[in-house]
Image 1 (cartoon, rainbow, N blue to C red):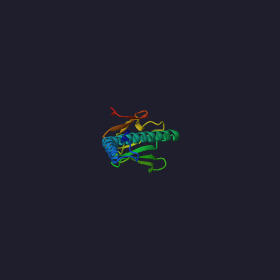
Image 2: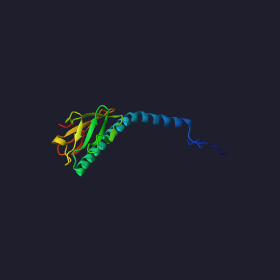
Image 3: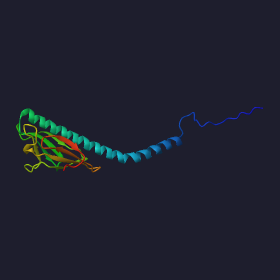
Image 4: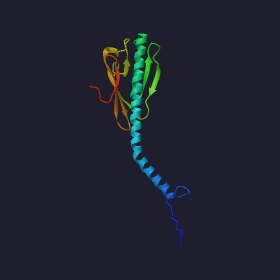
Amino acid sequence: MKRNIKIKSLVNPFGISLIEVMIVVAITGVIIALVLPDFNRLIGRYSLECVAREMVSDIRALQQNAIKDESFGYCVLFDNAADCYQLINTGTGVNAYKTIKLPAGVNLERSTFDQTNDKRLFFTASGNPFGGIGGHITLQDRVTEDYLYVIIDSVGRVRISKSAPK
C-alpha cells in the first residue's frame, strides 16, 4: 500500500509572504538610519570642496584677464557678512560683472586682503597680487565645521589647502 505523503515546500508559489516583506523593510530602515547622518556630512564636505574649486577657478580667470588686458583694474571683493564674492573690472566701471553667492552650508569665514580695509584682492598686469603681498580666504562647512583655505601667494599662485597658512 502506497501512501501519498505531501511535503509542504518552503517556496510559496503565490509570491512573497508578508513576513518576508516586513523583514526586508526593517533591514532597509536600519541601514538608512545608520547611513543618513554620515551622508549629510559627505554632502557638506563635497559642497565645501566645490566652492573652493570654483573660487580658485574664478581667481585664476581674473588673473588671466589682468595679464591679457595688461591692466591693474581687475579685483575680487570678498563680503564675509553676506557669504559672497564679486569679480570686478574697474576699467569698465565699479559694478561687478560676476557675483557668486556661496551655498547655505558654506561660510566665507575670513579673507586676509586688507590693503584698503575693504577685503579687495587686486591683480597687477603680470597677474601678481597688488603690492606683492598674498593672502588667503578661509571657507568653513557649517555641518562638519571643516575648513578649506584658498591661498594666493605673492607671485600669484592660487591653491587649495586643508591646513591653515602660516
